[in-house]
Amino acid sequence: MDALLHAFGIDWRLLIAQAVNFGILFVALWLLLYKPVMKTLDERAKKIAQGVHDAERAAEKLAGADTEAAEIVAGADSKASEVVASARETANAEKTRIVKEAEARAESIARDADARAKEAAAKALRDSEKEIARLAVLAAAKVVGEKK
Image 1 (cartoon, helix red, strand yellow):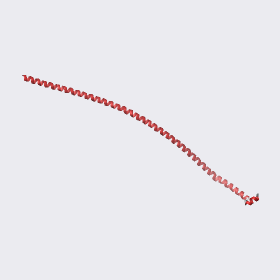
Image 2: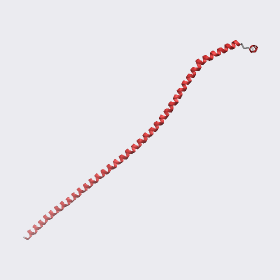
Image 3: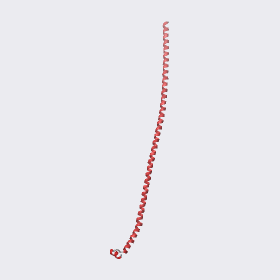
């Protein structure tokens, strides 16, 4: 085997030294490069996983907020409908009250006007009766005065 190694120009002492150097370099690179790089990659993978988890939680919260907002809007809409219905009922009741008051006032005014008209007619009748009586007295006095 020595002849074969010598034929190819391989020195077994140099081969062992190169193997030892490769082993030392491999251990040094393993400790100084591979482990720190793998540690950094693991930390980044954890940060990415945490970011994905946080994004999922944020999406869930957003969906929950959208649902809650829809519920609040629906509640506000129903409450607004109730307020509008209540306002309409109040307005109708107030309208009815005002109409009744106006009708009562109109009836009162009509009664007053009727009473005043009757009073005016009665006064005109009394005045005309007085005038007729006065004219009758004057006519009678004239007739009596002519006969004398």
